Length: 326
Image 1: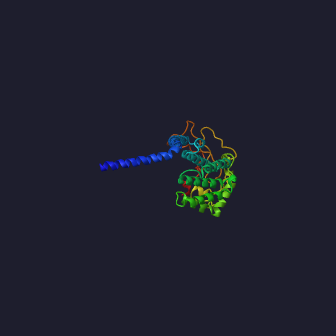
Image 2: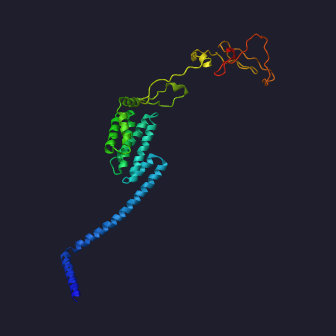
Image 3: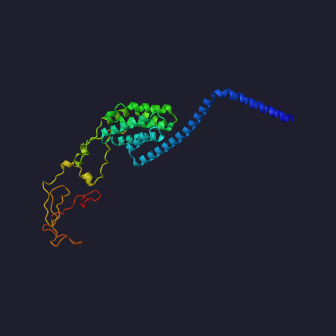
């Protein structure tokens, strides 16, 4: 009985406590109800927004993969404009800048104006995603591409002076991520671009202008050659001397001194072409073939009347010396 009585007293105390709290919050009951409803609405809205954002991100990645299959920077830029606040959109902008950088480098030796335009588009693309949202690796990738674009642009007239910008971006990459995947490469580029001879090479390459059109066979000797890469010696590779006794060592006279006939040798049916003598003297006609047609294997040409006349032989070639030298 005593235990039951104590239980009843405890229940009464709990009921009285709840009653007092209800009396205190009664004036604020409407506000509390509104707050609870707001929390529920926010929670439901957050779930809906998260599902929508996930679907948009998935659509953005699908569009990015489709643009990569086409391989054009315009398609990638369209994806970046359609999904500007997604990771896939940021990567699309970065990859489009990579393609502009690649096309600009390919045009450097054929059309400097087009190369400068492509490289400037690459710089603008990298700057559009620099400092934005993204993983640390993504930001390192952006800085690396931006520095490379500045370095390539310094090889054009429109981009002279951008070499300092490239060094600055390389240095920022090293300072912010000294142990990152691009840190060592950036240090090498800084050391390379800091040398005076390499800076001079970029200035020479910026002044170089490729020919406007592809030269023909007769104009290949007048084409302007691009400056040599830094560190390569500007020397002509010596030609090894020809072995003694060969036609190359015996006939070392200039091309302009070689005697050429004023007119082409006349030939008649059944007569072989005229062959020059080994000493470069007067040409002699080979004996005529029989009227029946070409000589058959094993037949000898008809001997001429003057048997004392020397036999005409073709000039010696490398590896096939004339027997008269023996």
